Length: 555
Image (cartoon, rainbow, N blue to C red; front, side, top):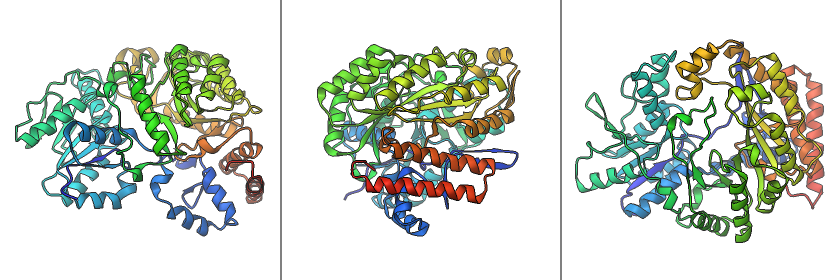
């Protein structure tokens, strides 16, 4: 192969370790054996090997790591854009550290450009590591960084310069974001825009023509030691009229599910959400473009599930009904999951979701207390959320509720209300219910961190070190642990595995497996004896044995 035009990197490494620390003690909400996460599939192999952990690890490690990960859309989308708009030869990397041998192989093709999406990478230091790695191995490579992290950093810097960023130390801002302190990496250009594709394409065209791109809007760069930020202007949403050619995507980057985007942006202004500060216009893609992608996925990647990656898939019942009916009409053999509001779910829409192939729906529940939800500017109360969960479960759709503890006005009583709410989830329907819980974070461009909201709630501090009129961050962490210990009717989610697409609440063993697994983790936190834990492991062994014997059950 001739010299590569570009290598596109979407993430540093995929990990979903759910742990929290208080009083110097680390609590993990997932079950691990020798640092191997005990997903449904891992446990099945473990018991198949007669609890021989070394044999299980050997089999697990023999499977390509990409098979254990979801597929991210950002790098695939940018790669396909470069192929179609510029005629580039492109190679795509989902997770840099997990696919380092593949990275090395691609760098041997001496790519002219290294393009990094910052949207999934939390720490600038990790992006710097990727940049250094490419620069050291390919002299002359131009490294370009864009994505959500870059644009958030720009918006945060604007607040800082206007004196509207309260209680965020410069040391923390410098560590966590770009455009503060000294230069963070050896990249050549930053694309600064909530979209960014148009700027990226024009930047590459200009460099290839030999033009000086430094006057290009939406571009930032270093001129020696001096940082330069050009004017930031609005861009069109290219994906609105663009369809990814899934037949041209390298098959070896496809994990256990395939991503698709239906729309971008959200009209709601939840007080805790820092996507509000990005001011993204709501745009929905044309159905024929979405359908062409879904059809290609179903034909090429048989058996893979689909994940709709949009932060809020359906804004109302009509949009849900239209999507599902179109999908049903297309007669595509796909199973899919997404994220939506609870107020669009009732018995009718749940049935349409099931008929269209939906097997799991993530829901932004956030709290089980009605007053806390009002403070969050959430427009749906816990009673309505519970109705939605029952409706989904009745038709066999699993749910995943996102929650956090410690938002202003949170108290012992409101935490208990959330625990009681989770324990009122159905347990006798064919759907299973999962959740995740975190402590509240004060994010720089979220509504709650504005001077007005800080004054209202007497909120001081930043990120994971804060205090308000009813609680502080350490108390919130303790309540997260308390919730995990006391919730029994739904189960902590293992997002970084394909188990959600495997688990079926109508299979009694599946429900008992996730329940027993959670009891082991809860027992470890509560200090159960070795004998008590051994009995739970024996129970898991027995449950998997009955699954292996039942030919009707899909493992």
